Length: 286
Image (cartoon, one colour):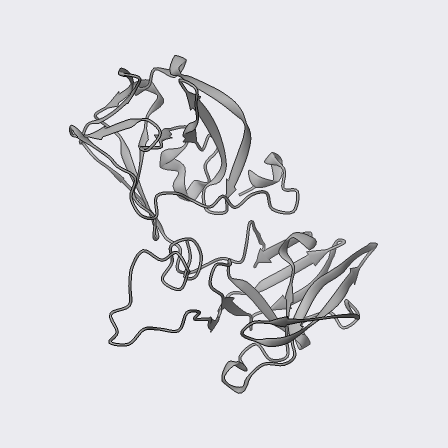
């Protein structure tokens, strides 16, 4: 989750509410300085390098980085004949991006018809994430989307007992699960593999990608598709769940200290999908 994505406070699917006497506008956009040096790579060339990036949080979208024109390589942009209209920010001009031996058509844009109250992105360029080779903060590649300062993950150990059952039989029982709290989502409970009857898990093809946790593998249980999942090469920041398994409580029975867990608001996650053809090797570079 972030400020405006998934169940964030500015997203269409938010689970919380603002305590105000009057209804808020249907859509709220929020722009703020990133305060992080951000770079863009295309065709082996750094085409943008800035410590003055502005992040735009737009309802239902990942945050987007906007670079001052002065921090974009002068000959990287070629104006095209395409102009669109953003529902909140007015006319938007599109550019082809050229660097080295690469050309990405309609891969950058600039809001050229901004209303007076939304001038923060004026004179700034945004790049289509999947059209570029890579985005970096300092010397580390950022995967998935611009880093969202409002996204947080905390992992806590517990001595509570977690039991998973399917078709009346035990799939897992653990007195040492961990719970993962992720901004805006319901808690997710992860079980060590030693506490699971792995003969009940059938690995299936297809992975999803989380910019904060890595590549996710899925398992069917008794014919129920993707009823469990695991990050088998979790990023260092969430290494505690590496190889552990979590179970979908609306697909199989999950009991915590004898109480069955039910589907909660915000439980379902919108998969990020693959980042510009991101392969497993690249996703594991962090």
